[in-house]
Structures are given as structure tokens and as C-alpha cells.
Image 1 (tube, rainbow, N blue to C red):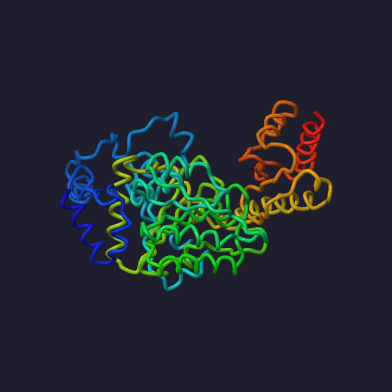
Image 2: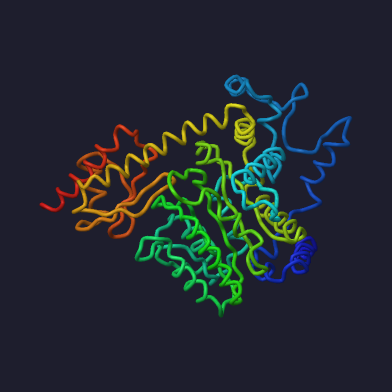
Length: 432
């Protein structure tokens, strides 16, 4: 094993033997090189005043070489903020601004010990880093039956984790903390579990209320007290889009520094929060009481980034940073939030009108981009195909009876017609 990896492992073991036992074999072996092209280039950047012939970019006239056909479209930005490689951890100022944003939006983080966000190529990349560092073949990866399908690829196919599902809702249509606890305690013999907490939930658009959130935290604490080392991951892709009574902060705050056997990881990003899906700017942040453990985990994360994408795109990081610092940012974001909230509330009023009760129910939703119908008499895939072929309406079939509707991409004026059309599709299938 590389001596740098051994040093990082020793730091983690000294600070928390529990966290060390959570690492996959790859997680133990990975490190970020201190000696190499990047470190030598960084040293030269401060000392090579005559000629700096280290890093693989081209300069012209003292600025990064560029094409006018590109720069003319981006003339509001300096070439130095667009064309050079961004650091593997991301632009330092962007990381600082995002951390400040986290503290402002999640008050329960106050007084907690957590690291500096590291920039990822959006959230899927952040989740894949979690999988690489912590998921070994056969490790339990626990998440609800209503889930984002990419978890299976990221943790199951790529890392051969054992995927453990529990029903998202209990009989009262509240978050099923009892089901989560049962799934966690079933891992006592293994002594380790990775838990994925995605709120607002994709596909249902559900975020738990305050009591439910406390129950989730208590559930993970109980598992830790029972001897299970828990990697608790908050997938906060749709963070901030809270439209009704629910918690309005990330569970990362309540889970941070919860128990010596709990390592909390936040994966989030500008992707959905700031409506910049194609920019691919995400973040991964660790919470632990030991600063040396945090440093070691961050160095291993940089090793994963260096070994896969090297660094994230520089222009989109610049765009996001400038937006976060702009005086108009909060007002413009609030304007878009109100549009999204209006669509969600419109959907709820349509569904509660009594027009469709005989053909479907719907799962609770109060946040995010989506809601999910629970069909009574027709199959979800059959209806999805029929709607697409006869009416030109696209939906997502999940399992046998669930149909996901992304109200986020439908103007409020079109929502009633959308659900009327889906209803007609159900009636078509009932009469054939």
C-alpha cells in the first residue's frame, strides 16, 4: 500500500476506529498524491517567476489561450476564470460560499464539526465517491422502496453492495422509521450499513415533518448503539424546495456528530437548487468530530476525483459562484420557488377535487419536483405506453402501480389538462 494511503489510514484509525472499519478496500488504498504533476505545478505557480513550464495548458499574452468564437460568447468573464483547470477540490471561494450557505440554511449545523464541501461533477458523482470509499461487496446499502433508480447502478452494479429496501411509508402514510430500524438492525452481524436518505424524495416528492425527522435520527442512533457502524448519506438533490409543513433543513445537520459509530455525508449541489442542471456542479461534505479524520477523508476523496475526472469543469463553477454572490440571487431564486410551489399546490388541489378517486390514489408530497400516483386498476407501464402513444403524454412507470409525474416541467395552466388526460388514458384501458 502506498505510504500516503497508510498515513491517511493511520489518521483515521487514531481518530475513529469505527470510521476506518467503514472504508472499502478501495477506500483504504486511495490517496491524493502530494508529489506529482499537481503538487509541483502548485509550487511553481508561487515561485516560478521567470518561466512556468509545468502544467498542461497553453498561454498567450499572459492569459490562457482561447478561441474568439468561444470567448465572444463568454465575454463577461475573464479567461482565467474559464479555461484553466479548476483545482481537484473545486474553486476555493465557491467551497467557502457553499459552506456558508449550508450553515445559513441548516441551523442545526451550528456548533457541529464538519468539513469544507468538495466540488463534484454534480450529485451522481458525489454518490459514486461515497460508493467507492465505503461500499464493499456484500455491504448493506439501505434505502426505501420508492427510490431513484441510479442507486442500483451506483451502489449495486458498480460496487456489488447488497441493496436492502424498506417501505417508504407506514400504514398512516408517514415516514416508516420502524422499517428503517428493522433494516438497520438486521445488519448487526455485518456491523456496517450505508443508509441513503433522499429528501425531498424522488419519486414521491415527500419530505418528513419535524417529528418524523427526529424519529429518523433516533433510528440511526439506535442502530449505532446496537453496534452497527452507519454511513448516513443525505442525498439533498432537491434541497430547499419545501412547499408545505415539513422540515426545511437537511437531515445532515441533525445527524452530524450524532454518535461515534455514525459518519454523516452530505451530497448536494447547484443542479436543482439553483436550476442549473447542465452545469454539473455538486458538493460532498463530511461531518465528524475529529479534524484529522475529516482531513483524511477529504484527501481520499481528492484521490478518487484525481483518479476519475481529475477535476470538475471550471466555467460552471465560476458561473455558480458569481450567481451565489450576486445581490439579485435571493430574490430571483424566491421567484422561481414560488412558481414551483404554485405548481405543487395546483396539483394537490386538482387531485383533491374528487374527479379521479375511483382510479388512483396518490402518495403524500410536499416538496421537490415530483409526485407519484398509485394506480388502482391498470398497470403503470401499460398506462405509460398508452399515454405516450395515443396522447403524446410522457410519464414514468415505477413498479406495477406507481406513475411518477414531474410537475416541475409543466406550466401551472396545463396541469389540469395533464391529469384529465391521464384519467382518460385510464378509462381507455378499463374499457378495452
